[in-house]
Amino acid sequence: MNARQLYFVKPQQVEIREQQLPSLQPGQVLIKNLYSGISAGTEMLVYRGQLPQDMTLDAGLAAFEQQKIDYPLQYGYACVGRIEEVGEGVDASCVGKTVFSFQPHASHHVCNIDSVIALPDGVDPKEAVFLANMETAVNLVQDGSPMLGERVLVLGQGIVGLLVSSVLAEFPLACLYAVESIDGRRALADQAGVQATFSPDSVADINSLHEKLRINEADGGADVVFELTGAPAALNLAVDHCAYSGRIVVGSWYGTKTAPINLGERFHRNRMTIVSSQVSSIAPRLSGRWDKARRFSVAWDMIKKCRPSRLISHCMPFAEAAQAYQLLDGAAQDTTQIIFDYQD
Image 1 (tube, one colour):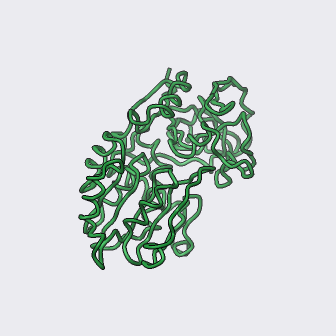
Image 2 (cartoon, helix red, strand yellow):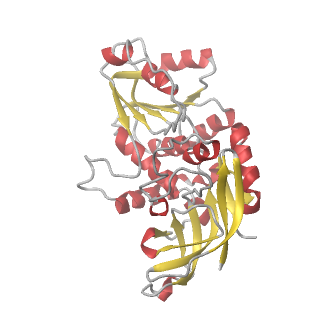
Image 3 (cartoon, helix red, strand yellow):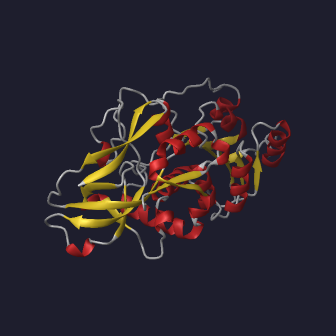
């Protein structure tokens, strides 16, 4: 059968192409998608042509193991659909089940049954679209290791930032603050449980943040800072607000973007730690007790608690994919999460 598939054909240009799917092999399933979510982080780097050329797209996902960063290419990793057919060796009772899969945007796709994740009872397909980003949020919080009574600051309230804030709001912290330039996202952060939000573009706001974190006192600053803006220069803001021996968790992937970072002054004198966080693997200190299945289980629990469907700003027909990317690229202030609807 044929499927409509999204291709990034060159920077800032996408096309929907009709392609024939391969025949089902043993152990495989055919899935008809219901929804898929656009990643405003990595996926927009693909859209803008800001990915390093000397690496594969995402070696951690089977769908992209051998795919080089070379246009035209497919990308996307947050699909929710129903199994329509099964190959030899797959239980026929799987037909009709709703599953999540790490696959590029398309009306249908074929993949191994072992690579899909069944939706738990009570999870709406639109909320299930957030599984990949919620797993990222859980991983980030685990890497930051917030403790009872600590002060935590989240830089950036895009989707991952908002999910991280929602997870952190479950912790008994001394305070949870966020920095975000877009008014609507600051309002969403307040709803997520952040106690106060600040604009990086307002001198008054930054001064107020300094006061709340008691930056000028010996024990002042944030114990943990999460850098989730996607802008490497924001690391300077993280250093400016981090406490003595505090942790700066870098969840952003900058692609080819760079910026000068001041690692003198406060950074060295205050013995800060910069932590690289990436969801494709389990942190070594946890790998003896945690695996991907356990982390996905926690991510589903957090989806049920946080109800992230409120973060969907646009649900657009797949045929309007080009407009969706233009909107994200040029009017980020008007968007949070855009999802494609394949039910036309």
